[in-house]
Length: 154
Image (cartoon, rainbow, N blue to C red; front, side, top):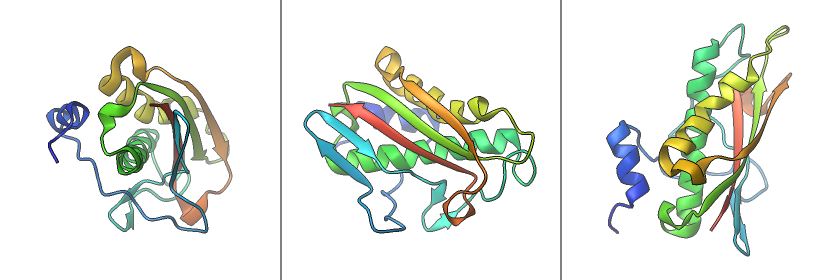
């Protein structure tokens, strides 16, 4: 299969689209219904390794949280490619849902989730602009620092 134009942009940026991570529970990692594709929550996994764990604002820096969100987004894009065959099938990014395992007093969840949002806009331009929520959480699965889910229109 030839490289899509979105994957070419990723490569030019120095980013690698990983293999889609396996589910860590009893759910499907990506689902298509009609012209919508949505991912389950993606963690900052590189291969089988969870690379950012702990609370952002104490064990994890704000900027490492940003990088964790970017990795989560790359994993979500890998799920979407697995579902569609090509990231070029995405017409519009609709929504990014983000959870940040936050230390007490950490209030910069929006900056952390920009790691995902900025990547999507860099890849898709105007069609990458989306609605979003960025929520602070006390705990996340596997002690992940960040969890991100994405909805796209195809």
